View 1: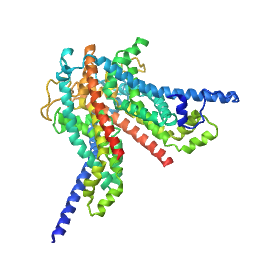
View 2: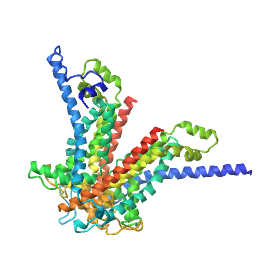
View 3: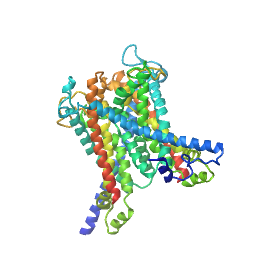
View 4: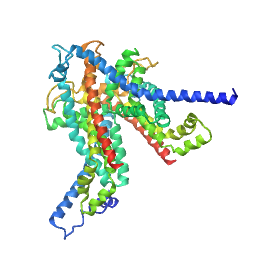
Length: 306
Length: 301
């Protein structure tokens, strides 16, 4: 990416650089110099953010090198680092995220459908919308507090997969609703009009035309929301996910641990061996997230290609 | 009643039932807010029956878990404030510069590469940032400032700054791109350089969007939990020395819940008092940001 190439894409005013205009006054030349320094600075700062991502990935992979093997994936945590693995955390995350999806996706999509297809403009609906926007900004640990008081202690679910999944569902619900609403809004209204013209009821229209047509967009939003839930640790700590779990959950009422919790636990120990374990677990977590995000991008492109 | 009529009636019933069901799902979000406020208010009220509000808000010692107990929340607020300042120093210039580069300089192709990269940066779990701060940033800081602690505010601030950078970059980019092209063309026609156009025309025109992004980012930094818990330490410490170990409000909540405080004890109730304070602060910042953004939308739509 040479400088001239980028200048071409914008307007052609800022042509400081190779050509020196001899007629330019010193003032003008100073302004142009400043402009090119500024441009260079902005570019450098943007690239530094990219470099930071590269550095982070490089460091984590380097720390994990040699520790990530089949044994690591198939063993339970151990006090001896060389025997420790993430089997419990992997299965725990799988259980937690499955129940989270089962709870949050139907509720979130239904809420989005109501707001987009059914709700008449009014005070109540404005309230719901403002409320969703604000919920999206509430720190995840506050959801954890809610889960602790409501699901773990209030309803008496204890420190279980289900309590954590319910908490996580509330956390990602605003994300799902916002994404699903956008997908539903993108469905052309001619589709609805055609269905109504043929005598379909509102629900028939929604069920057979709006929903299938918005599905790729909704799925993209759902996958992104779930990938956020997979990386969250704070609400799980609050609802009592344990760090040392030497078993695989067998029911939604069981204790469990999850990948971010395991990473936190290993990273917070002083010994370097446990840091390598944390790095290896981070690689696994990032691979899972990367796969999910790629899937979301593919779905989004397929949806926009139609 | 004819068969057709009956069928219509049943269909209407189904329609109404579905409508009601969907409405209930939409109400879940309102119930969540009510639940959060209810739980926090109830338990915090219990707490404030034992500890006066003034002692909580104005006290400068936070030792709720051991004797002599003291419930001054200022050290935790100070810790959070340090993270806010430190992360803003990193994220505000970098984020705004990235946004200016993306919207004013980068071509479509470069943009198409840079934006997803920033999104990845935003999607990295916070516990990973915590690990990175602890194992990479802190050792580097210690090389340059030998008196830096293992747990310190500086490295946590740096990674939180990197974490909120994409939020600022993305929101500012949106705001800058919403500025009408005519404004830029007008300035160019008067002989302004691209830097002058960016800084004196585009950024001022998008100022409310830019400011709103800062507020939202700060709110995110305040609520950030895992990175600061891992990297900044567990020492409620009213200091402004970034080399010191501190404790944020969020890190305190994690510390107590890992320690498994039995329900009903004062330690358990402090969770809710601190969380209530956290919630009030982040909520008001979000409300401010949305208000500022609302004004910004009025101008250009």
